[in-house]
Image (cartoon, rainbow, N blue to C red; front, side):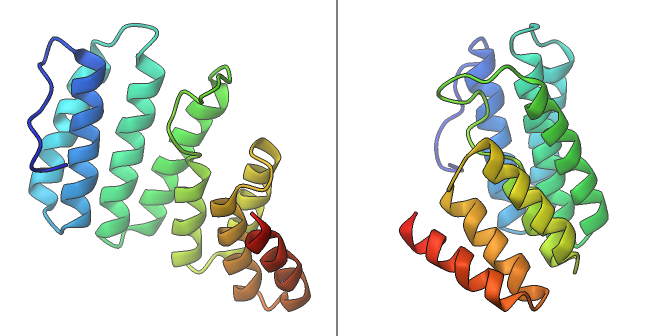
Length: 165
């Protein structure tokens, strides 16, 4: 992603999503200043977005802030941003394919697990499975949350579901 040229600025949706993706890549490669620069571009685009694009840009903005906070070890802040993104995602009419490219609950659940809150993560993954039944990523997260709580019988059942998925 970091080696690809940015789309032209007049292609606002593509450009904003590229800035988001670059921000995540910079956060993942321990380049917080560069990630912050990409976040600024996403924030600017969000401020002037059309009504159709604004919810997606807001999800991107919060998801990127969550990624950045998580990589910096600020897990409560990361969870707050992922919760904000989740609320926006939940408020969007469902389309196929979905408007946002992955269920943001997966990021929230992972941060909650990292923060030592497996019961909260379990609830997040259970809710995700209501929206996206038998989603492998949600099942994997749920499995980790159950194991972290010592719910081994439930974990075995979910592990079987995960393997089928």
